[in-house]
Length: 275
Ligand SMILES: NC(=O)c1ccc[n+]([C@@H]2O[C@H](COP(=O)([O-])OP(=O)(O)OC[C@H]3O[C@@H](n4cnc5c(N)ncnc54)[C@H](OP(=O)(O)O)[C@@H]3O)[C@@H](O)[C@H]2O)c1
Image (tube, rainbow, N blue to C red; front, side, top):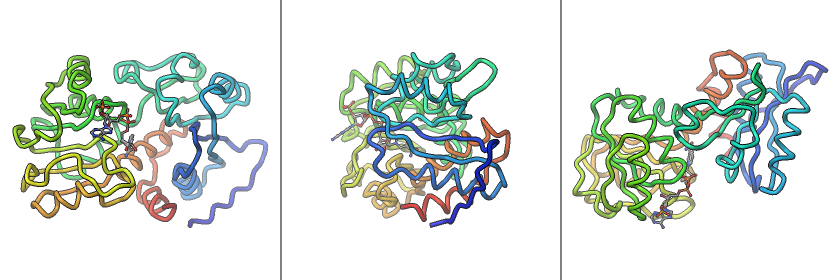
């Protein structure tokens, strides 16, 4: 664990994350390590906010002048009505994961899509790539938005096919069948945004449908090497762990309020050590 020592003064900026249940979040470790590396006079805390307290919590953020809060499950949609403004991208995605204090008050934005795109760009450019996204929930909306924005051609596969159709129509993608039918969808990139594999040794797709030479990212980051990523590597695909999406979205959050370039390597190390 990285030791974080902050000399708290009357000028110390306060940031945090609103989530429920608080459980185990690595956001404080990542952000506090970055603040220390940058010499920022700032502190980051986790706030366990049940749904019935969300409005009051946002009022508290505003009244106490927190510089920024990350907004995590289950508040990403519900928080929108409590903010002073929501930027256009977050409105399109339909979810806010960041509220930052500015001239317009508390403004909602979404950095999940940037996190996903930067994580995938570690493996190469996205323009013109054939991408398949598994899932049609909140993470899928951010990933599909990001891929379309970068010029990839995206097909969405989901257990509930009507949700995939709705998402695809809203964000400029195509809808296909279920993840079990992946073999019918040739692709260069595959991103899992279903919760299959979260703390369980299961994959959302048959291993035989994974393609040699493709890039496979799993948004699930617990465990770090999911069944999907192990199957993909065994089939000759390049893999991107879900932690990169989380680290890059947090890096963007830090830049938004501080104007500093975030130390991604420091944040990644803090993520690993906070596991
Ligand atoms: N790395 C990151 O930065 C990051 C960021 C956000 C989320 N995530 C991860 O992404 C995952 C999804 O999060 P979310 O917020 O999008 O959740 P969500 O809105 O609840 O969506 C869940 C998705 O998983 C599908 N699903 C759930 N159980 C399934 C099953 N047994 N078989 C097939 N499909 C199943 C759902 O399909 P139906 O539509 O059919 O229900 C839906 O598409 C979580 O594991 C979360 O930890 C990671």
